[in-house]
Length: 114
Length: 116
Image (cartoon, rainbow over all chains, first blue to last red; front, top):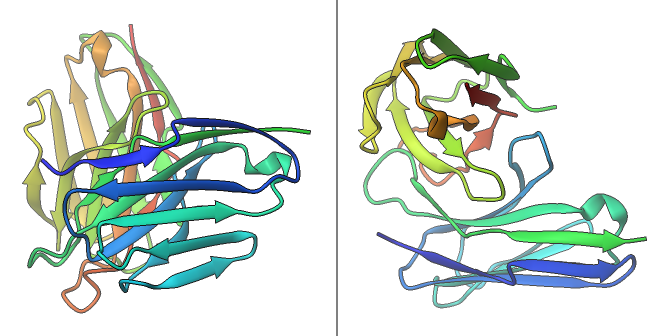
């Protein structure tokens, strides 16, 4: 099946630093999604990307849909302690269905030291 | 606050028990999903319901039995589970219409299931 390679697997940074993580795929996706998951909670949607080349921001977060439709990155600027958590990328295909099955990356565990 | 509500939040059960997990959404979504998630791993898809009909079963053992009583509710019936079934069970929903087929899934906070 499809696989997403998400890197890095974990990051330990100081508060105030910028963070960058990315996902690559061997297959094309129609939509790229970035979720954050805190302990004891479900994944929360951060950013959704719908067009190749699209660059979208949400506060301190910026994400891009790669031009080849096989990759995406997420940047977090000026990190704060509440950015701690696991970040998942997910590719969504259309495939003729009325819903899109998600293919998840393995996650990036982010730790922010005050 | 998540718009997908799951109950209970925690469940401990023996291997011979029968229990059910419940999921509810009032966003008018027509696609609903069950996922299983192990610690620090991505969610794994189990079932997909589209317009209240089971569309996908990802080769899930029969001790897990999904049910969609109406467009807002999704249940997962559990029976004779094994210790390795201990995990976080997540429910998600998406618009699920052809026009909105690229709209993302929204997740509940999950049920933490422990099998003794």
